[in-house]
Image (cartoon, rainbow, N blue to C red):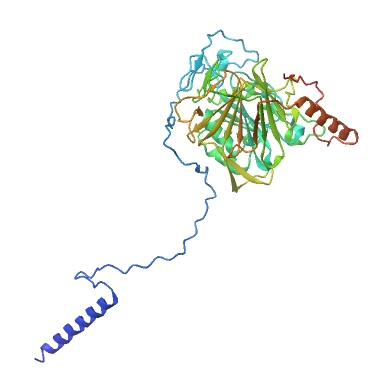
Length: 464
């Protein structure tokens, strides 16, 4: 009995431990000594999430829909095989070719430019790479610019401060004097991949510079900022700041690309062209865009005599500095896109918050051609070739008129866009502005007055 006493005491102690454990709501240890550990109740305090500072792109917030969309992995086989050593020609000779009634959006007849829907004017144009050149549009002293009239496509989009800048895209034609050439922005990084193009620019902030140097397309970047000086030259002018004096030669840019073995004739997907406009459009003669912060506006007016749209910039006719003729386009396309502030990227040029324009995913698109307005959608897979313009439903393409196209990118809800079936009398408006500025200049001893009538005599189209 004395020998059993310690055992009974031990058993009794174990029973007590078990009862206490059960009372406490705990699971006793198993024979292996590895029972379930108690669960710590969650608290309402969340761990802070640190925003990334080196994220190269921002995921679009536009939700996906069930609408069928173009393939995110389109074929990017070059439409043309470049010759071994093409020699740039400044006076290309047109190559006869039949005009197709409908071309695109996925395939194009041999010899047709997928940016214009027209035959290439020369074999040289067919065999070179699409070229994107950054051109300034603010302050007013940079106007009139040179060489925009030779571009197949021009993108106008907002940068810091509510003013705009251009990305002029060349393939069919070139120019030995384009500019003034200015710095690259975040959207340009997407345009390079969208068009598989070369990018010519004056410089950039350090974030963009490093992004380009780390990219697989770094050899397609042409800028004095990274040691490519040959295609660029300074043209100083009284009253014009140094940063507005850089101009470029597109033929020399293509030569440099040839030397680097990157002057390949890549194609494009997404644009469809027809000679006749689509049915069911609404008549619109006047397209006005008042950009964010009201510092700058753009107006396009349709001329039924030649079927083109003529451009006005902040109330004045927008002319080319070389020809003196008013800029015009065959199509105007307004793209609505989200604009995101990127405080993690410092823009030394302006000292302001960098804007990222989310031109991937999809959003509303308005097409204007032949005096008519069409509503649809744009689609673009981030980092992929192609920009698709489709009617709602995602199957039928919106058909551009063969020729030159200007894209205007605006904030959500078509911010600042005003359409009218009747044209504003812009000749009277511009005359009043010119008169006011001439009086300001007359009372100013320096050349620091606002934009004054160019020394050339501009050719302004009298619209009916």
